[in-house]
Length: 91
Image (cartoon, rainbow, N blue to C red; front, side, top):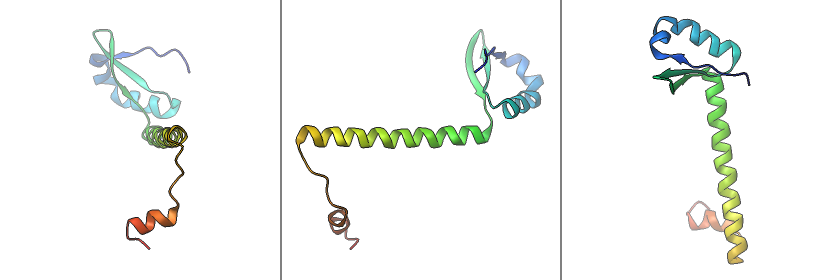
């Protein structure tokens, strides 16, 4: 990733279309700053969707790892799928 220099919000107002075009073409966020601090970012919508999907996948992976660790610590066995369905009245 290249060095990202934030654009002041006051400057961004006049350049919004070009900022959006830059985010879409370069597939890198364009950070906006206020008083020298980053406060927001413009990112391509497709890139954001991919990031959200990846974050959801990572959350699922972490939950599975935590579940496996809990099973290891408690020495419990996973509940068979048929039992889960029966418990939920789905079979």
